[in-house]
Length: 185
Length: 195
Image 1 (tube, rainbow over the protein chains, first blue to last red):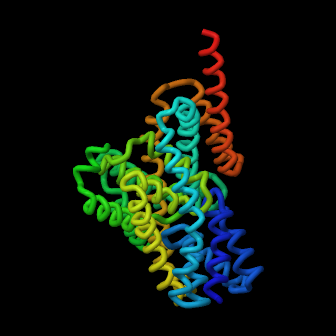
Image 2 (cartoon, rainbow over the protein chains, first blue to last red):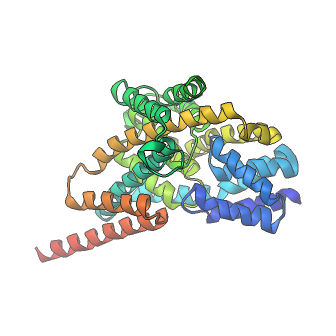
């Protein structure tokens, strides 16, 4: 019974969170805190903090976290399955249509306008993370600059552009540098 | 592209797909666009299974479908590489790392989230993520505006301002760009009929 409830709740999270990550937070809150009372508001806030500190999408992270607390590993698997099931169907349908009609001129015209928009969205996501790194969430002023963060960013960009270094390796080095430099300086 | 995929053989393709999504998912902190940039580095630049324009199209599709962008994008890459089997393999690769990590962390989450060393490592990684995303957006940008038309530059500028400065919901930005595309198609059709 609890498995079914977890499944139904997370299907709703998966189905209605359009636009990724942050769009899912209020939906998860409604299901998990308000409707079912599985987590207190305080536990929910902790969950969001952890979800942001660990890899993976917020919806999958919360499904695992809630599932495991309510019904153990089985609950985590059921909740995660529920949360990705709606997009499995919708994404497969879109993929099918895309590859079927890709060559059609009308679709090509629409896609040619979508591509620049997507590039801008990706760049904007990168810049918001960069401002967070440079100013730690404080006001954007010269005296608030986090020089360690800025240095790591420039070094990372350099090795990515110049040496085409593996991005995941770059991330690991950045993590190690962040730890060492902040402790030493 | 097809040759690159076929030269791998089916089993090797699926194993590569699984390991790549697993590895990317285990290291991508932050929102869905982060994983998209890592997928692009792996599947477009390194393996050359997908071209840059197609990657942008898949990103738009992932963004416009419900659910996590990271999972959607991995599904689409899987579909492109190996059909339904590829989709299933990519999903499993993408959700395993967060599931395992969260299961472990859920036991001692207060100790984890208030640990100074964890915070410092994550801060360094954030700087790295920013660099990866900006590096990828430069190369994708070149692919998107190859035609060098004014309208492409205008869409980039408008979408950036709407997202970064005005905080407009990303879904509306995608819809608006699609509508401009529909408009472009209608205008071109009318021209074709006249001539």
